[in-house]
Length: 200
Image 1: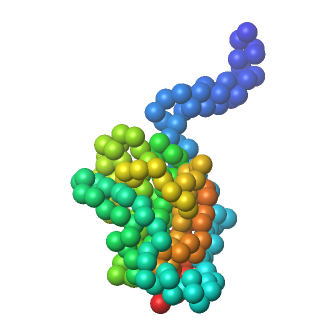
Image 2: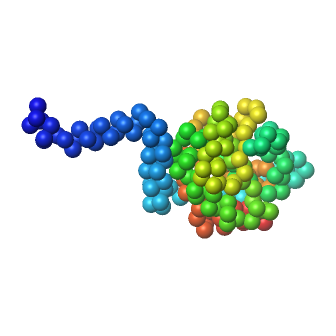
Image 3: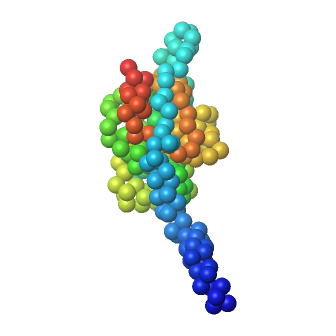
């Protein structure tokens, strides 16, 4: 037994550490840190959105009415709706504090949020946490300042994704310009430029 331990101590240590991480509260921070490292390689950059092509009649209709109704509530309990962002490009991101890939992309989203012109581009991060206090605690701990909301009803299309993180980019008229499922790095000059171009 002693000989086996001497030969395999490295493997035993690795599997012990792996079991410790996966079965304790270390799982989420360790996995999100590893995934953040993957994002830093540049291989998961978000594809810049493009303006959707609309028929003239559809474009005229979209200027009169905002096609999306998504009731929300702010972090401090005030009612909100996606329609209040009409006239701006909107980046909607579905996430949760228990989701490691969501946490991995949050620093990039925060960095992008600090760079865009918020008079033209709105961020709507929708937390799917059942315990809203976990969301508030995470935002405070990480010093995130992006606008975060909670849904007050079932999410309609195009936001009813089976997985998170999930991001939808909307034109100022409320049309879907792009969607992205899974983690991505949004803090790139190309992505920022594409959002600003959509806003013009």
